[in-house]
Amino acid sequence: MLQDKSKHQFSKSATLTALGKPIIESWKASLRGDLFQPDDPGYDAARSVYNAMIDRYPALIVRCAGVSDVISAIHFARTNNLLVSIRSGGHNVAGKAICDGGLVIDLSHMKGCRVDPVSQTVRAEAGLTWGEIDRETQAFGLATTGGVISTTGIAGLTLGGGFGWLVRKHGTSSDNLSAVDIITADGQFLRASETEHPDLFWGIRGAGSNFGVITSFEYQLHPVATVLGGMIIYPYAKARDILRFYRDFTETAPDELTAHAGLLVTPEGEPVVAIFLCYNGSIEVGEKVLQPLRAFGPPLADQTQAMTYPEMQMLLDESFPTGLHNYWKSSFLRDLSDEGIDTLVDHFVTAPSPLTAVLIENFGGAMERISQDATAFGPRDHHYDFLIVSRWTNPTETEKNIQWTRDFWDRMQPFATKAAYVNYLAEDDNSERVKEIYGATKYERLVALKNKYDPTNFFQLNPNIKPGA
Image 1 (tube, rainbow, N blue to C red):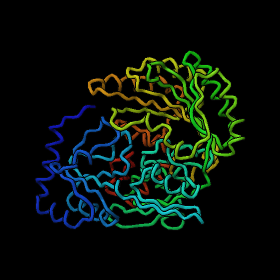
Image 2: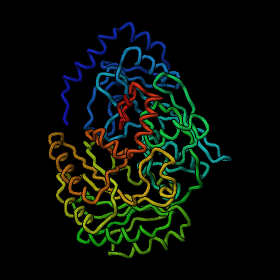
Image 3: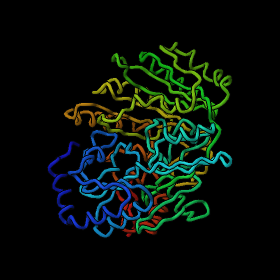
Image 4: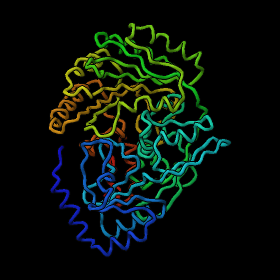
């Protein structure tokens, strides 16, 4: 997975030579935003993303100041036959935001945000992170489903579906979309909603990065203020019992509660089991709901308390810093069986890096009650998925960490479905895996949309839906 820097240097140089300086300078002068070339100050920072394993060298990076820059970038790339990638938050583990030798359309500085407290909606530009949008919506005691890390960009998470602490109460991020502004592969600006280009709006909610550059999102908001949240930590010696109890507890939990389990290693080097909790409802009722988890074990530590929703959103930020080497593998589970739990518990302690963790996420609730066909987002009837978050600091340890992760994922396949959360796909997950995520019927419908809105596969650096013949 380590990359040859000289190859990338050649690729970007060849692109720039073919374009010629006058063409680049003329285009640069027409932009409101900034244009970075490889020798410019700020280029290396602009090409860096969350995952340190991604080391790519674009020929050009345009940091768009507005919609006109995005339209101009699409036309420039088409005219000059450039590979294009789209960057918003840069948090995607596969690093699809950055390309080699092509043009990065960077939306990260487009951060306009307007909350309408009367209609309880927000219009948010694509460069915002969830922490930034929460700051604006919480001024009115409102929020929408948005990830579990505050530094994640709203765009990528939403377009792949969008899990978060409110998913069981209010559905996914994409379920809460009411409209988007999108620029298609031919540079056309469209508004997509249930009444305007509804076919495109269907596809955007789950496979949106395939059809254009979304510059603005409109979300439905919900009253959210103080939540009961935090984590309860248990000894690893009782991991099997804890995870079985967690399974039984979550099967009957109210929609107000989202609870995820984690296998992780403490800073002192001890493996533990943690249950991460967010109860969005009456604190008094929430205390009663969480009591069985607090009493079971007993736990090593109970760090749950009443907190603001933004504090809940930042709970795991320090555990997911930028700059680590990351390789993830994930699948939805048919169920959280005893045998599956045994496999998780036994294999996790063999991890080559103490920074690695395994998450078990619980769904259901509002997300499950929405029709399977309502959006392109994948299956809604699986109550759990597992995510192997392999992380390390030394690049010489890349091969053994990747191999361990693949072996672990293979061992879990007897308990898994073919489906996965598209936002968790690794760089090496192939097109067949993408087909399996959506299923045959949805995938066929997505191909038809791709044929209509992007028949040349101009937007291909994503979990790609290939156009039909």
